[in-house]
Image (cartoon, rainbow, N blue to C red; front, side, top):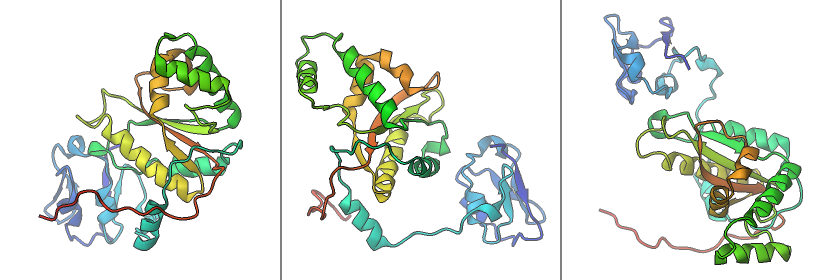
Length: 268
């Protein structure tokens, strides 16, 4: 995004909310009470679009974006959201069906919105889009795993179970999302936080689309052990795998939420 602020002066209410809410302190009001970048404001700007989002009159455009094309903010129903959170499950049984392309597109749209440190937009997502491509990755992964040190007890057990028809790494899922990060661009100390936040958003949103998910550290370890598989994931140069989330059409349906209480909680 080009760091250019434009103000429709006919719309501007001169309220100053854009300046007060700017997270990077990049804006100021000029002598006519019109917001503008400070002298070094363009360099300070995080491109977070707070100024455009908060403007009550839709007078501010950043990077050529038209505020009239933004949706009006909505925060949904808190009871429905809590029910979704309570209903969230880890899925380990999937139908042998590709995830519908329209749902992949919805996930792609959503993944532009999870928060990141200083609005870092450098995460990359590789999404396995068909069951055939997932089968190719699964087959090569186990094939290469046979070449890893056979004395490792965990690997021996995984391969023994695979020979018996159990896919304990990929759980026979027909898709997965690999989130990657450019460690040279990400904000300090956010190289793992940003990807995990994104996966948390993905998990809840995917389940609202009636898709199953599974946090998969086994696959993260696998791709380190068998790097020959990684080219199939089409990860751009300079990016490192941060986490893997399995995705697929669930073969099971959970009928009710579980019952939990927070384990430790202090009001200060």
